[in-house]
Length: 452
Image 1 (cartoon, rainbow, N blue to C red):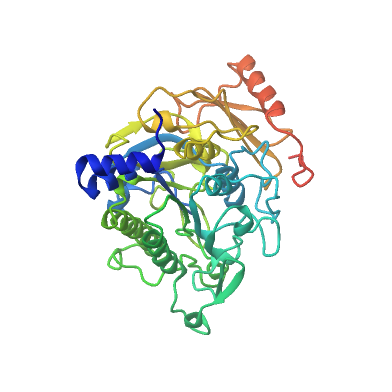
Image 2: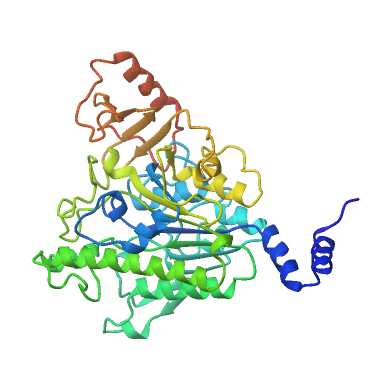
């Protein structure tokens, strides 16, 4: 005899004579909530759990202790917009609509993870930076699956941490505290709204994409003052004998860490801990902007390169995932994966089949500590400095710094810092990676290949 969901819950309650058991059964059938917290320009080495010694990140370290810490997770690209495009659409840079920071919008045909989850009954929210479509375009968040959103549409507006307005759904919301003064710090507003979102949707499955802008620089302020690390104060590092810009940078990381802690505490307070999987990562490697020196805190750790590089420091990211009761705490995984794997992972979490034609694969087995199918290869391209490409093939990494430049080849298992170019010693492998670079992409009129 088959029974439906309502009959099952009624039966459980009747057998127990207790509504609490029926409620527990209902929760066991609920799809997991999904939160993806994205930092902006945070480096692989900026967190204590990845080796940072000078800045304290206790809440993010706790997130690692309570979940799984990945050591070989990659961003979608080495700058903001394309990385976020890969995260949202499940496509790598050879196929993605957006492959650089020029303001091309997502199209109606570009399916996002928010659209997928909304169709599965999730309440979807975006708070923070979008970067995938301007006002009145086909790429605005509300047109791409988000029921509600608050933040910046583009990355230049997001430089300003005390903006005169933010976008809320499809209207501009003016911030009176920033009209001629600097009272309303956008990061704090985003955290407040995130806590409200969790409170307001505690009784239904939700997807929250919390795309913070910290610790990105205010580039314009940096050019004016030499210190673009825009933060209300430099506590708790005020007494450090560091340059002011570095005290500010550390204070931004502290603020990020503290507010991730607030989100985790809210989940606990609402009884949603075991119902919610939380991802934390960064959109690309550390920056050298606004007067900040990424070497001061060794923000890329053992890796070579920073933001705008396709060496590991520009694309290998911190990645922490927590799901109490499902993910064994304190685990460290060397599974290699990238942002385009998030969409199919979220689909499997929601009980859906991923769409056809994407580049990502579900990482749910790896999250749960089970055997995981790996990619044949990982592919990136970047269009800001000529045309650069990178491919990871097993432990090998090929980098072509320009269309007419020689292929570089590194063995990441033995040379994590990409110092020893082995292309001359392994010409056949270098040639194989070169062929992948040609076949892993299709030409896009928006992103023509520029020789360099």
